[in-house]
Image (cartoon, rainbow, N blue to C red):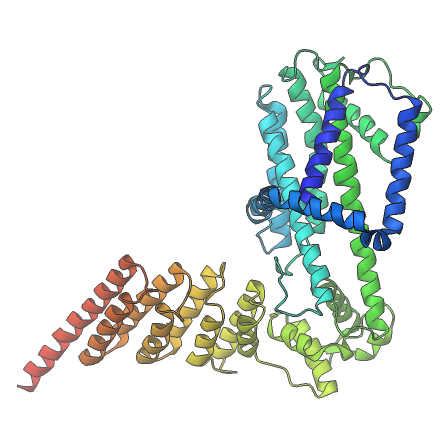
Length: 539
């Protein structure tokens, strides 16, 4: 229903703007003002008495009728969701939001948008409108990505951070700063688009007055003045009749009025909404820390947690006599810090097991020692994440830490651990590289026969891996481990097992099966030669 109402509202506003474009076709009289006043008052009254009005028979009948209309326009909401998903899942990653490094995200986003702005200015008119259009698309994509993350943060708070909640994003970054950075370039691209539309006569000749041969500074100044009129409080200049000088770029005709109207709408809906959301996030973060300080909650959300943990480590860290990091945990009583000494046990274990930062681990170890808290090994956290939240970043971090502990003989990774991880994520998409790494590790640390046994159950069948790329990689891995086998009969059993898997309903692709069989045949030929030579030696 919301999609339909939004569409109708936009069409009505667009229609009124078109009618009023020439400045004379629409004139408002006193009766229209009265109607508008009563509409605004009625809207406020409806909000105040919404609960009582919802039970009235006429309202229920109207709601049933609107619900019938909404069902007929379900495709409209589906279309908007599809566009939103494309912006977040594809366009935002094109803008660099897939990078894990903050510097790389900033560099990719700023570099891409700056290059598009330069192209927009120097390309022949009106072709420069194409790169400026992509500036708007990429900036809005990052903004929508931030909105998704904030919605997930609110959902996490409501569900007490349960891993089973239907999150759409992970909690790797909040993308607030990236969104505001993107909108900076929107304000650079908008006057460039106006210049291109004017010089290219997209909406007819002389879109603006006094606009021939103007520099970027002139266009940016004109755009800035028009934006100021759209910002609350600053619009006093228009009320008191403050006018611009006659040599400045000026509105000329209906098309230029439409352009300025769109610019003002952009400021109202984009800039002010984004700043308001940023201020709201800042306020919510402060409230969250206050709730924790007063013991109403036992943990913070991931973004606040990351910032406050770094601040607590810096504020309590000191060096011991042997040069190792030492922490004065009593300083956590100060209001400047979050007291992590009473932080949620399970979350402390997850942070400890998913970070490589030595100071963070030492800080949590000091807290665990004071609380007699048993910390988990990274491989145990990796298994828990695979069977729970399936967060890609946590999976990679904990698994790499587990590999380091395995290589340093701290805690060995068992083949069953890897099998539990693969089983936990067998229906999860977007983990291509991680699944390949787990399979490769299994081939490295497990006995060949055990690898074949464990991967056979995942490479095919109803309870096997869901995604084709993973099944193909597993069947090829089964073939590769035969190179480490020295018994002909064992290799032949593996060959028969691969053929059995190939006949299953949920089987790997035929090219992957043929690749595995070729590798197994090479192993058999190698073993056949060795066996004959041994027989000759014995004779």
